[in-house]
Image: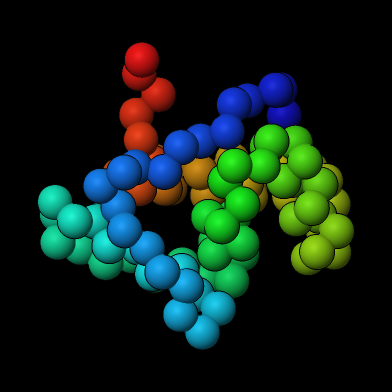
Length: 90
């Protein structure tokens, strides 16, 4: 994993953690997205530098650093595709 910047939450997405799961509300689209435990952990820690976050994931979920980095990158792309993250422009 190179030194990627921290992804930013889309300001048009409201969210709340309910019973350990983040529930994202895409206000303009009127859609709801429910995240699993790992997704919720990533969402709640998006402000953490990505390499540190991957290290934390590896330790917390007892997976290799490589697996944690792949999972993190894949999930961030899923969030980006759903519109939950702000565009990187500007």
